Image (cartoon, helix red, strand yellow):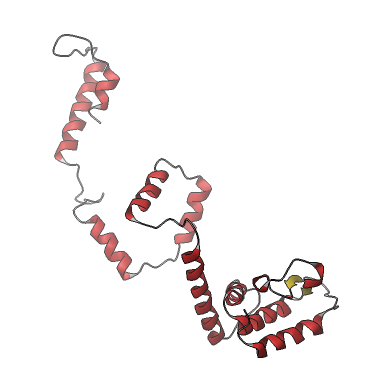
Length: 214
């Protein structure tokens, strides 16, 4: 939907001036009539533009149409291959882009709500998933130089309250100490040739019994 006929008229004149040009080197294919306005992939609706011309064309469409055109312009701006842009222009495009994403997400059918139940299902689905060494390395690189917000630090602190961390002053719980002691004694008895029996004198599987101590 065209919101500013003045800007759309300027855009049309810009396209007319570029029709038939021959781009030397890298070029990008552009829809003269945007898909959001009913444009097709037909050859007569496509034009080859330099990256700078393409950027300007989408800036004009954003000014003329807003909406989805603003999203396209923001996506082009955020990748940085078109050079620096004016901060005011960026802010306006970013706000427009954000509004369009909100609308798209709200209108998307069958979009699952991120309820506590849904989050728990996602967590359960990841249990047991093993990350590759490459994935772990990439995660580590992504954390380099990252600064946590005060809110994030506070939440981490709260989750660790009452949990002893390994290091100076750290020790196992009394229950864990008892299990470790029983396990060591059990292993020593087996090494000395002892056999296991239950209260009725029946043999007990050593491996199964050991699991109860770990």
